[in-house]
Length: 194
Image 1: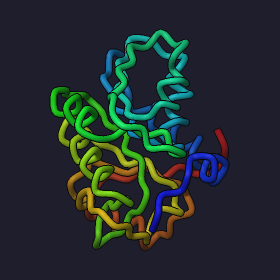
Image 2: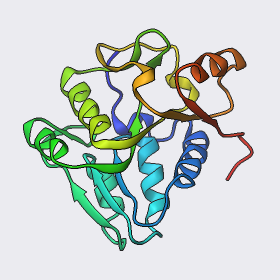
Image 3: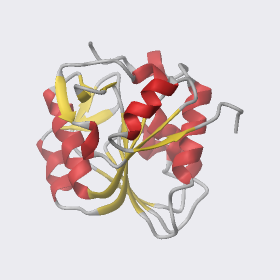
């Protein structure tokens, strides 16, 4: 399973991603420190954060950084090598920053989520970044629309039990929701629009 370029996934499941982002914002409190992983769902979170104040955002996504450039938020960009067509930064420089921070929340993007295989991504470099994000956060929420479930990719990030919760859309099955609840907290947006 290869990584889809940003432009190809930008418009897919956009309503679900917006609703997931809205639910994610509802978890935050004033003065929160937040890691925003790269991805289209986390970009939707960034769009909602633009109007906020008194938050610190750490991201490895140049599109998220650009989205927040005119905000009043403190934004820290984890430098590194640019993953062309995706907009994510990775490599030793990114890892070094993530090893030296501690945040309240991490909103983790998803490539593939599977009950047995856990969270997986297309490259070992990306798995390493996500692992460090989880380690740096007090609370980690996976933000993933229903199309990401029952998928497996190359490199393992973690078991589902290693994250605190998942925010997803109403199209996951009741059976999957029940199975997920055995491992973590789940917030399922209802699909009624924002």
